[in-house]
Length: 170
Image (cartoon, rainbow, N blue to C red):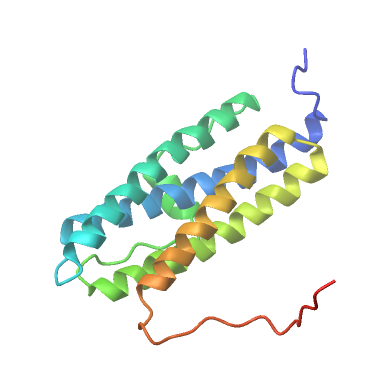
């Protein structure tokens, strides 16, 4: 019985993209752990806490991604060898400056968002509403935390773009 109401031929491409995202999240998670353990400097308290928050969130998402793959009736990849081979996110030394760590995290967010976009495209083509719902929420959350980290690394006199549209009273 196909309780998912998804064409069986369209499920495997979704699973492949989800497995790539799972691999990305595993490497991202481990980088965050390393940054959490090795952060130094005047931003220690802020970033030590933030990295812990981010890796705890990544841990939850890793489990949810694996369970989504299982829901689609496939086994998720589950070894670090597979994660390292599949991930677009690469390992990085955690013995870098605090701002380099933030830059690394934001670069990883860019890679995660690209892969999430690929998952969304594949899931949309298959009519996989469950995956679309899951990943759509991930995108919204990751974009917000990326904005916050980007704001953290800016100088106080930096400015955002201003709207050029003029509004008139009706």
